[in-house]
Image (cartoon, rainbow, N blue to C red; front, side, top):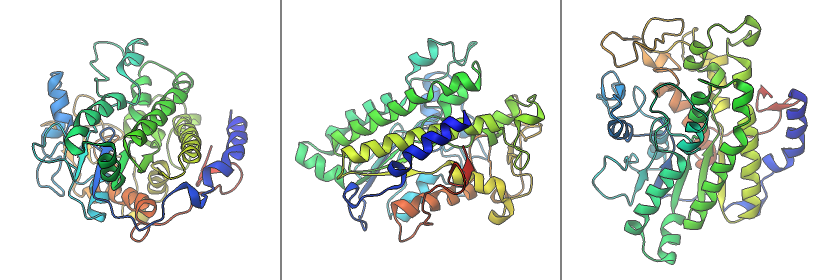
Length: 389
C-alpha cells in the first residue's frame, strides 16, 4: 500500500504543487466577509442549538470552555479562540457569527459549521449501522445540509446574479475541515482499512460542494485537509489495546490512522488541483491541518508545550487525560493549570495556543503579508510535507 501511495504521489506532484499564474487572482485582496462550513474545529456557537434539537446535552455550554479568551462558554469547542477567529482578526473582520444563534445581519459573514458534522449525509452512516448502538450521531448537519442553509440565506444577501457575483466575489469561503467525523464515527464499527474505502466518497462530496459554491459566486475558497487522527487523544484512548508495533516510536501516535489522514489529504489535493484547472479564475487554497499539528507533536518545546504533548488539558482520569464518563465541563473533570502549555484541549479539539499556530500557517496562504509562509513540496523519498505516506 505504501508503494502504491508513493507512486500516486509522484504522478500527482505536478498537479499538486504547480501554481500557474492563470489559476488564481492576484494577491492583495481585501475580504468583506467570511462564510464558513465545517464541524467543531470551525463552529463558533451552533453546536448547543443543534444538540438541543436532538436532546443531547452539550458540555461546551459549561466552564471552563471559553475561559481563556472570552471569559465564558460561547459554544466553541475550546478554551478560547478557534482558527477561524484568528483568521477573522487578521483580515480585520468581526468574529463570524453562528447562523443558528445570531439575530443580526450576516452581510459581514455567516458560520454554518456545527460540531460533529460530517461530509457525507447521515443516510450513509445509518445504512452501515455507524456508529452503532443507540447513538443519535451523526446528526443531520452534513456538508450538504449546511449548503442548504447557505442557499436559504442567500436571497437576504443579494438578489440578482450580478449582485451575488460582486458580493460573494469579495468574500472568503472556508470549506471545512470535513472528514474527521466521518472517519472517527466509522472507527467505532469499522477497521481502518474499511474506513479507508470511504475516503473517495468524502473527497468527492467536498469537491461537489466547492463546485456548488462557485456556481453561487464564490471566488476565493480555503479547503482544509484532515488532522493526524493517530495523534488524537480520543483515538489513542479507544485503541489503547493496540500492539506496540502499531505506534510510531518517536511520537506515540497510531501509524495506520495517520496514514489514513495522509491518504485523504492526498486525494483532496488532487481533487482541488482538478478544480483549479477547470476554474482558472477561482482561487482555491489547500490548508494543511495535518502538518502543523505534527510539528507541535514532534517538537512540543518549540511551541511552549509540555513534554507529554498527547495529554489533554481538560478531562477525566486516564492515560491521555480522557475518560468517557468524565468529559471536560463535567463537575468531576479537571483542568490543567496553563492551557497555553498544551496542544489538546478536551480530546480532538485544540487549545487556543495550538489554534493560533495553525491559523498562522493557513494565513501564510490566505494573507501572505502576515501569515507564516511555507511552500508545499515533497521532501525526501515519498513524503508529503515532512510526513511519510
